[in-house]
Amino acid sequence: MQTRLISQPTRIEAPGYPPKEILEYIGRVNSGTTEVSVAMMTSPPGWEEPGQTPRFNEYTVVLKGALHVRLRDCEIVVEAGQAIIAVAGEWVQYHTPGGAEYCAVCLPAFSADKVQRDGG
Image 1 (cartoon, rainbow, N blue to C red):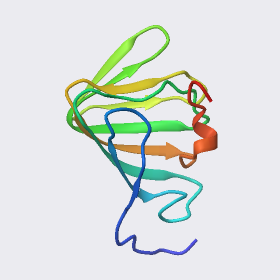
Image 2 (tube, rainbow, N blue to C red):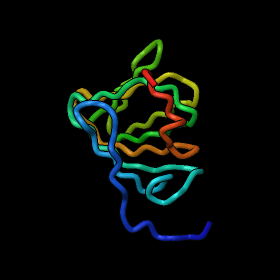
Image 3 (tube, rainbow, N blue to C red):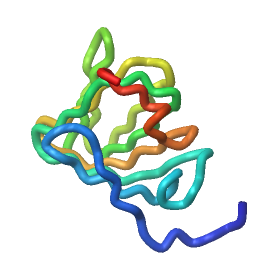
């Protein structure tokens, strides 16, 4: 791999409703990177996605609003200025009752075949 500038992100379609915006800067789609992905998310109020049991760790820093993270036995509210680590193999579901902006880093990089969403 060589040092290179990533001049702009790629907008990725996201599951869940209402739709959220994903801007992938580094990852399989925008930079062809499989080791790690870095994306900015803007989730509207009321957004919720299906639960998942990913095969990657996800490191998330909330910039605005609050990200609600459901686990099998609890729910964690991650507010602006806080971060959370979701561990590979653990069931998790994200939602934003009041909306949120956050940065997510996945290691290895996010991919549809590694996210393992509920319902196939």
